[in-house]
Image (cartoon, rainbow, N blue to C red; front, side):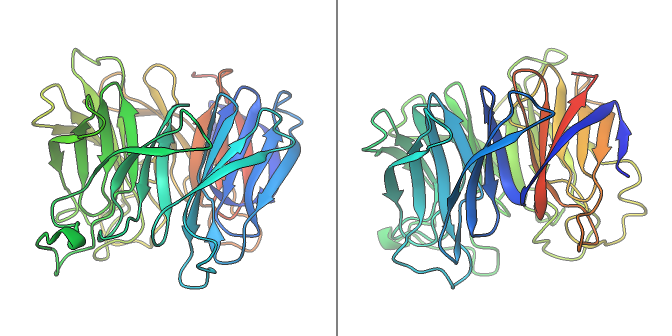
Length: 375
């Protein structure tokens, strides 16, 4: 039995596990971790009786585990898994017409060099992506204009100096982890970019053709978890501008306690300051090392007020209120049971729709639709 607090389970969608969920209107989009299912599209007009409308499959060795949709356009990533994928398929973005979600139509595939695109943001016009690019080491930050979805155009790119190998830049990280742009998120004329074991960066994109670094920081040399997502909060809290930074409980640089989330004060954005952290009660125990995928993963990019839903890997859905950013507190949870054949649950992503319903996907098996009384 799942453990709950201020949450009610409405339905489960039986489908392969995945990396991301997104809702546009009453249509749910599910990006899967492993082939053959790349993307599943589901009607959730009646959240207690979800209906699968369509599926898009991918060839072996590739996945499209991320998905975003807006204004009748769906964007999915194409990313290579290991070395098994047929290189002729190619990494990049699949761009679909989903005006009829039961009949998605490929408009175009935008191709990138190498492994492909990992995570991204999409606002209906621009995509803020994390591709591998020819001549660069690791993933970089890139902005695409999808005004004409059939002809995406690169608007601008940014990278950590040292990544542009073809440009002759000196590479200073031989004894460190390869730089990897992980997840750009836009708010206003800023991009909030997680860069894995190279921390986070705030970029000024008032001129999209020339993104400029405002500030950055990195906790990985002290806390060995990679920076996964930097989520800016649109309204001031206690008179301060706030950014939530989630570390992912994988790829630890050394054995450690589970990852957690940071709360940063970015009122002076050239000098971000961590002011608090949040960890699920009891999870860090005595600070001794624990297996990966026990701790934090991903906050919902959509939230209501000051309550942030989180996918917390083995701990399921956590609802964290940051009304007082100096003392974040948990106000609800839905602890998922481990899928059959697995020792632990692996809650990978969560999103919210306009009705305040939550959609929680397990990395290994399916999606749960959850109602809460606190939103």
